[in-house]
Length: 250
Ligand code: PXP
Image (cartoon, rainbow, N blue to C red):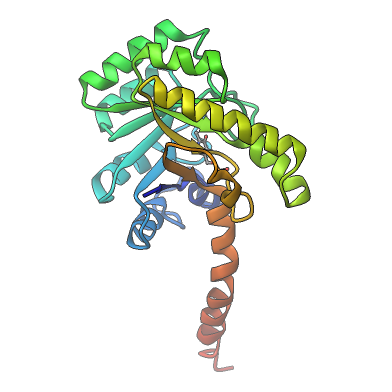
């Protein structure tokens, strides 16, 4: 069965928009994670960025303690964040590239260029009982390099597929081409003994097309779930506020 890892970064984005630097603000990523688990999610993903723009260190500690499925810590291959991972010991880390100016993770890792340091990091994580996944584009040389690092998983970057798909709301020549790259990438990875996850930009419209990609273990989805939740939840939230306002007696 295809598993769902829910990326809860944007719950923290919402909290930071109002409560940055304060403790106990809402909405709580941990509460959101527990709700996702109760709804059947198989795992929780959170990205501790170097600039701490959404998820904070205390969120990671809290998630590790309070969730019942498994924590996938998304992170850059940086000494400071590696130290956090080794302290928290999530079930798995997903290594992503990070640029300070980007809105979200924009490209895949260049594993070819960073093979040695990624292999070293992979060994440290595995020695601590943490599995390693590398977030990469469906590119033959990157997948081959990922296998050489000894990583257990790759996460195929579906951003380009999603970007081309969503422009017209249906599949396009470009999204079909990206889909083919994902299919070949998944086949290559499986043949090399890598387990295959996928994520980035997946939503309720483009997901069915992705089912043509073989060997997928888990999808990591964040933004479209949080966006959908705004609309499935807003009506109830307004009803509850109006009910409370009925208590005004003047
Ligand atoms: N996987 C990785 C490695 C990511 O960096 C992200 C974005 O944080 C996601 C999955 C989730 O992407 P989205 O929020 O577009 O669903």
